[in-house]
Length: 176
Image 1 (cartoon, helix red, strand yellow):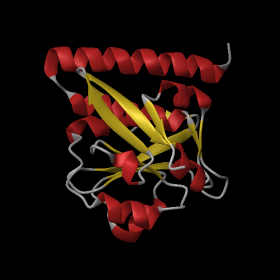
Image 2 (cartoon, rainbow, N blue to C red):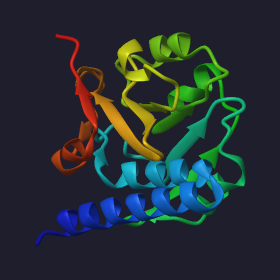
Image 3 (cartoon, rainbow, N blue to C red):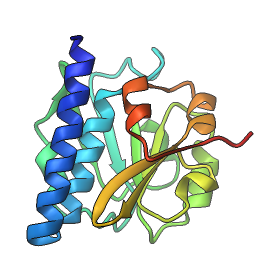
C-alpha cells in the first residue's frame, strides 16, 4: 500500500469520524471544515513556480466563520512544509496564497475571477460554489459534510488534485 493511499484512507476515516462526531455531539461544523482544508493540502500538488515558498499559505477572506478551529492548523505541516494561516485577506494579497477559503459574506464571483488561471485552490461552503467557477465546494447533506470539485477550473489553474481525492468527491463538475 502506497503512502498516498494510506493518507487517503486516514483522510476518509478522519473526516467521516470527525463529521459524525461533530454533528452528533456539538454541531461544530467549523472543526470539520478545518479538517477538510488540512487534508486537501495532502492531495494537491502545485506547479513548481507556486511551490518555491517555504510555507503553504492558507488564506481566508473576511468573516470566514471558521472560528478558533482554524488555529489548530497553526503548527501543522504537510511533509516538511509548515502551513501559515492568513485570515481576512482580500484583493491582490490573495494571489500570494496556495489555498483560499471564501466565506459566504464575500463576493465570491469577483474573487474567483481575480484568481482564475492562477495556481490557487479556491474553497467555499457557499451553495453552488463550483458551478460559479470555484474549485472545491464543501457541501452538507444528511448531517454529513462532503465536497465537490470543478475539475475544469482546477486543470486551468495548473494545480493537480490526486485521483484518491477525486474518488472521494461527492460530485465532479465539468464545464464542458
